[in-house]
Image (cartoon, rainbow, N blue to C red; front, side, top):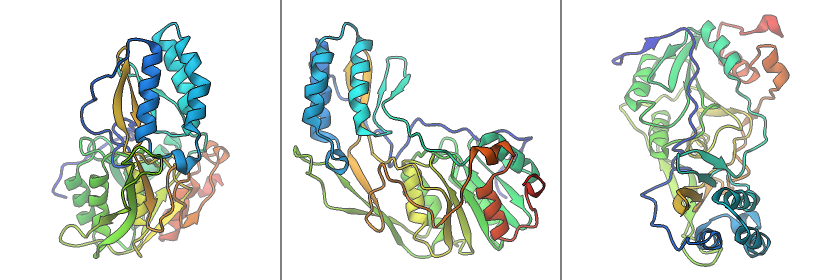
Length: 353
């Protein structure tokens, strides 16, 4: 395959939330802290940064002035940095934004919102399937298996430090003549959108517009740049244009949603599973005080049909239900559907149904 791959006896893909890019990457160094001599100053600086830069106030119909009126007195009354952080977390929770986080001096992240939606991927069940498919581990956070004539690839993050684009290309070269392919990104929370779209470019012979972005650019909550298209162009000496089943679900976020939005515009790709997580942001980082920092979402990302992705997600072409009860039985209905649809000779878990 032109790349060294280590076969292993089932090891789970790493799922790393840090560094979600494109839809989730923080860019550049942290700006110098503002006037933060008191907890009230820290609160006001944070509130003002959101007021001037946050992208989803109108989109989510949030009254930011009302939030200030409700929480400023609590911030002024805080007796410690942690008490202030608790107040800020409560206020920021109203944004319903998975990319808005607070980070302590040691790098520990305090999330202001976590989605309660069911995730249609289970590590233990997935390991059982991969054992039957003779899983081959790639660099850190990806690998592949085969189910009958159908190759399957799982990519756990769009992070070049964990997944090599040349290795993914080598995988495609090895299975170039396959009648179809399963690409599983249900366990992928994001990473680098340019890297994700480079891989997507191996599945289309023509340039496709996968979506649009607009970035907050003025003092009013409605101030944005014009819609800017996000395109994907053919990459490499050839493209895989046979049927592709792309497996998605609620854990998919950030630049992974950029990837999914592009792939669903290709005629050979069918998106299967559940609606994605709905978390796109391009967050920027700012200092708070006491060694803490926080992130502010700065753009709105849309599908090719100009539907906002944040807090809504991207619907699959074909919804396949899955439940905790399925996982308790050792069944992955989404992967079963894909294997059976593409004609794999293995009937996974048929005996457990």
